[in-house]
Image (tube, rainbow, N blue to C red; front, side, top):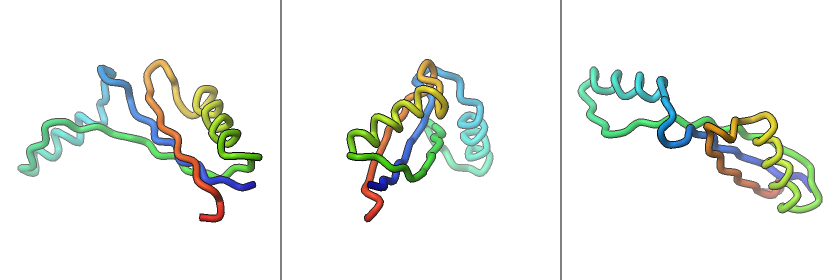
Length: 84
C-alpha cells in the first residue's frame, strides 16, 4: 500500500538557531515584537509499506539515519494513506 509521510524537524531546546534569531531581529526592525521564534523543516514524500506501522518504522529509521541528527533535532512523523 502507498503512504504519504510528513516529517517535521526542529532543533532541540537549548540548541543555537541562528536562522530563527535572524528572523526575530528582522521582525523587530519591521516593528513586530515577537517573544520567541523557531524554525522547522518539513519533508514530505510517498513510500510503499504493508501497514501504517511499517511505514512509520521505515520513516523513523530514515530520520535516524539520514534526515536529521537525533542528538540535536526533535522530529515528528505523520503518516497518511496514499488514498487521502
